[in-house]
Image (cartoon, rainbow, N blue to C red; front, side, top):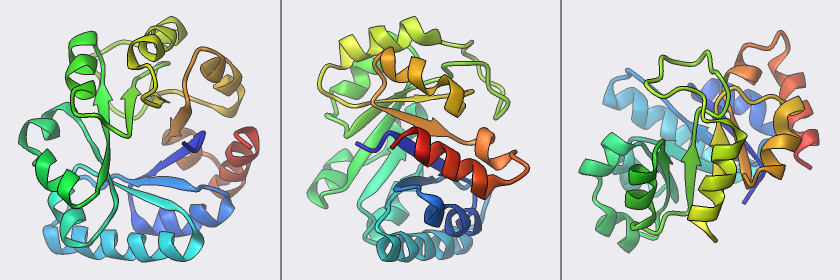
Length: 196
């Protein structure tokens, strides 16, 4: 699994940043009409195919199936309604969000391509009902997840990566550190280099 996992909120950001070295990118679109979702997901799918990057569609697993996307990410609420049998039949891999041991146990029963844990550090992205999990929790999660890859997310920076990987994470997901950088393209290259 790629160590650098980029998360973007619009296909335009994806098209700007994938050429800077992101090989695993999640398109996480909130609050858009279905026609716009379909347009952006199809465009992202085609762009990633051309650039040799893996697209992960956040939440919208039905659209991902319709558009022949090969990877989705589901949060705990999405897991309640997702048709895992349909995803498995179509060969679609999925990553699952987890925040506590009960959620992790539930996620692992679905044999995911990865499990995500967050926020590892304080995050500016959104109000979270969970406080920072910390590196010790990353180590514990990796022990419990076993061979299933572990994605760390939340408050990560290139400077924090050595500690996150040493704690057991297989991949580091980033949103705000790149999106809020004065030069997102340069910051993306820095991440790619740090994970090379």
